[in-house]
Length: 585
Image (cartoon, rainbow, N blue to C red):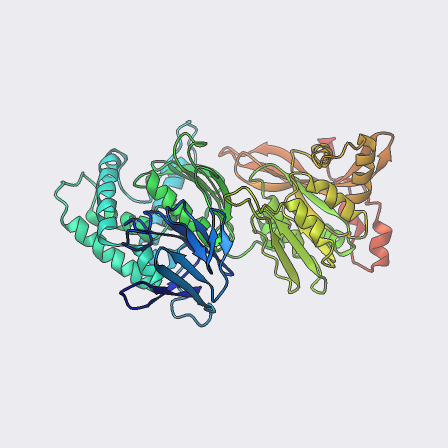
């Protein structure tokens, strides 16, 4: 957070506090800092504030924007502490950076206000309704997606409620500028209280009769959530058993719970409110979304992954997809209890990490690759230097010596992009003991393989594919995406010498995630990479309510590196590999 001094002719100097976010400066009432002066354009300049910097750019103004006397363009330029930004006759001085630990309004967080908005009694009611719905659809075989009652507003009443909310939002903007309050140093609690009071007053003046089953309290709750939080997402983010939240435009909000897809009875007021929620998520991370850059990957404070895509690419309105992560990361014991793997498999993977075998975790979308990577990463020794590289930081490693790197998208000028591949190359100069790449999806696969083959063994990564054999084919394709015309045999030799273990994880139709295969790459025979299966999931049948029945078994193949395990004096009973497939073969 930063403090600034604002100097205006014929007015006393004023101070303001800037939390991370994007601020519009101009003469328009829609500006976060409004200056009613003739020489200042309606939309004059933009301030982009992150935890570590303030950047300023001109927004196409008539008279230009100056930074320390130098005219700047539409490309963002960093404004260091002590510098002066001048628009017209108004000067804005960057005074100082405030440490979050010392700041009296450190609780203000424009990206997530769940702590303030959460109502325990409301959450209990919602959880009870969810339990009832789950019970009703346990044996449901129809094609219609079941509806979870989150808001309690009947579907037939929703259009009227949406119209009321639109009118109320318009009135709220006239009476209250919440972002301007935040700039002046208001705490999150003060913002919430002020918004609740104004919204209550607006709804008290309502002359439209409410439809059956709708109360002012319900509409007020939704309006407050949309005004200072993430709208309907607030309640859903607070629920630990919901693993995915999907917003298809303002009127359709879906969730995944226990592997089952549900539609909720909640909705945003309109497209603008969905956009406001997206901005609250991405602005503190220094990312942006607009027509020139209509897609963004981001994360919530708890590490949950967020993807947003807006018109013109999305034809149904702004769309949000949130992959929620557990507040407490899953452990090996959790995965064993869930039936995702056995203790023997976990012990084997632990030993593989300890003796520095390179491991790829393979699987489809939503199969649990990142969760499993988190668990396998927990086996990494405390005394080693670990460098993690991700598109959007999701891994939650508990070791002490961890360096976290995150890729950066291009700025508004299309410049400044730092790709995963650049970070992989840079990490080799950072003296890593282990490199953990969140996902290989492009040319970085070649750099990863080269690192594994040149002394950086014991590395981990994930890849999208449907089987261990498919993972090898996909690796070949990704290496070719690096732009080098390498012969396939050379690529396969690199893969065979670099990768030792492929762990395949699958999501089954009942929503469960299981490690379906652990395979070892053995050698090259001619033009083919050979593998042997160490463990598999033997699928036997389905229960009447659609649950999978099966068990994890060994395949009777002994890893070729058993001698290394013995030399490392690690305890691994060879009997865990005994063949338990029966008629599977």
